Amino acid sequence: MDVLCEKCWYNTYDEETDESFCSLVLDEDEYVRFMQEQNKTCRYFRPGGDEYDIVRKQN
Picture 1: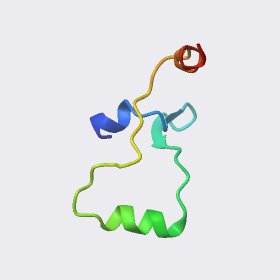
Picture 2: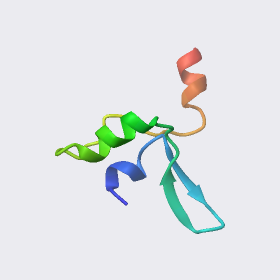
Picture 3: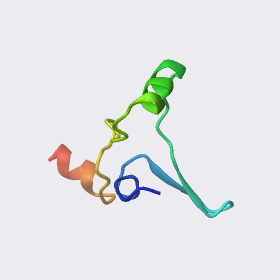
């Protein structure tokens, strides 16, 4: 997995398969465009944080 993916908000770990995957929901058109891009940098990347990030934003 890409280093950028490991730090992404959408990276989800599945304990049963012992693998990580992207939990971002894309429609079919978005997925095809993403896979056909020459530059494979994810434009949906959001840096992940700890469980207190949402609370900090509310204050």
